[in-house]
Length: 217
Image (tube, rainbow, N blue to C red; front, side):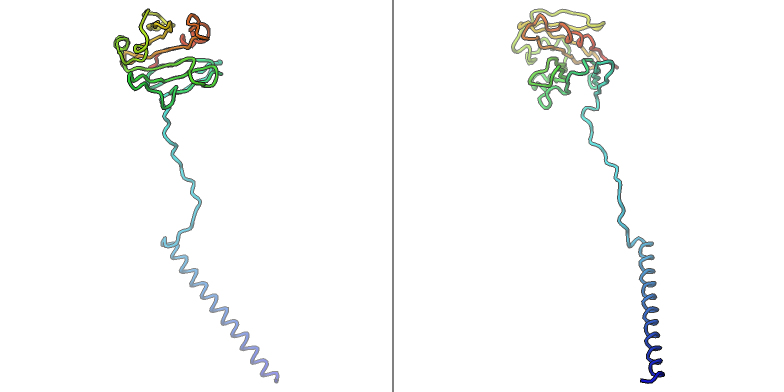
């Protein structure tokens, strides 16, 4: 093959390759243009990482709160407008018995249970709410205490400046009742007697906890 023929063949190869590059570049330009206009018109969307704001579930205990200060925990209940304090290291739960917080007959609601150790069947101190005035409650046959016991003493007393009723039942258990006149409800406070000794029912810490009970606005 002579030099002239080789040159012609080489020129044609280079020229064909150049044409291929030009065609490829043109095709890429067209494709990029189509993609650009599709993206601009919203036909193509890029996946982005979303940081959604999750709405927390409603808090069933939103109406009450606890405040810890100087070794005491103060429980504040906004539903029934009262507060009570107890040692910071004690355990508590509200409602006291979870799903079993109601006495279906008397509609007694076991609002708060307090104990020096973790719950093991009965709370040392139990705060309940009954939708009734104190006078009607004492005559209500459906009230749990009226079912099994009778009143042997009913005294009007003052607990740290607040009026209350101290009722001693036939089993010698004493329960304190505070009337929430505004809501027409009665709040009861009972402490388990240590080792069954009812004379020591409110001696020491239980009596001190009782003295912190008060209604709040």
